[in-house]
Every structure is written in C-alpha cells, then in structure tokens.
Amino acid sequence: MFKNFMLAAGLMLASVTASAQQSADCPLSFPGSELCATIEFAQAPNQNTDSPFILKVYDQTSTASVPVLVDPAQLKVDLWMNMGHHGHGTSPVKIEKQEVGTFLISEAYFVMPGKWLIRVWINNEKSEMTVVVKP
Image (tube, rainbow, N blue to C red; front, side):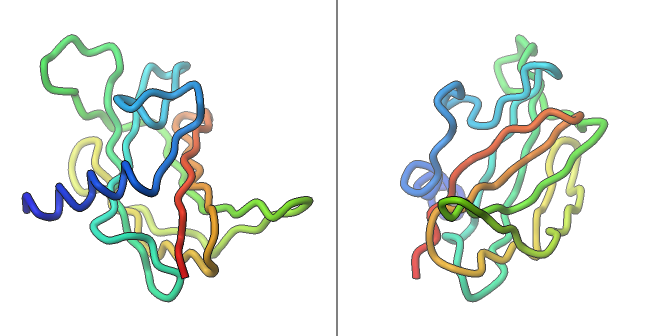
C-alpha cells in the first residue's frame, strides 16, 4: 500500500501539472463549490491499456487537520488532447464511487502519446490537469 502511495505521489510530481491558479495542496480547484480534488495513478498513464486513477474530492473550507472528503452533487470526467488548431477526446470514462469523496475512474484510454488533459466538472464547474503519456 505504501509503495503504491509513493508511486502515485511520484507520478503526481513527475507527470502531472496543474493550471497556474491551482496549488500543490489543491491541484483541481472548484472555488464556486469550495471544493478541491486530487488525482492519483497507481501506474503511469499508458497509451496501450486502460489507465485507471483515483479522484478524491475535499471540502476546502474544512478546518480539520485531515482534509474532509465529500461527495459532489454532480461529477463528470473526460480525457482531452489539444492538437494545435483542433483536439479530440476518447470514449467516455467509467466513474465508480468507492467511498465518500473517492471515485475510481476507469476505462481511461489515452490513445496516443503526448499531453492529455484530465477535465473534471464538479457541480458544473470545470478544472483540469495535464498528464504526459509517453510512448
């Protein structure tokens, strides 16, 4: 378990970059809902197989020492690749609730190498992260 956590943490630092307005503590920010989300891969995203990941949603207003996980009223996730003047996505991902505020995102197929956006909508508010998929 610890090994998987360390791998996920390393992947987050090495291959995932958040938008400029977002911090390392909150890589996916949803200020309208006062929520924050994180993404953790067990293995680096791969172009040849399903690349499942865990999405966790936290209450940004909590004063608890440990972030409080919450279920958003609405959740949507997709994968998108910008390619100059056009872009494309993939087939819809599967979202499965694991426990409060924790969701397994599977059927996540990054169909070619390059920079992919993981776009997340929570309560109709969008945030995104870039994931580098290597050949």
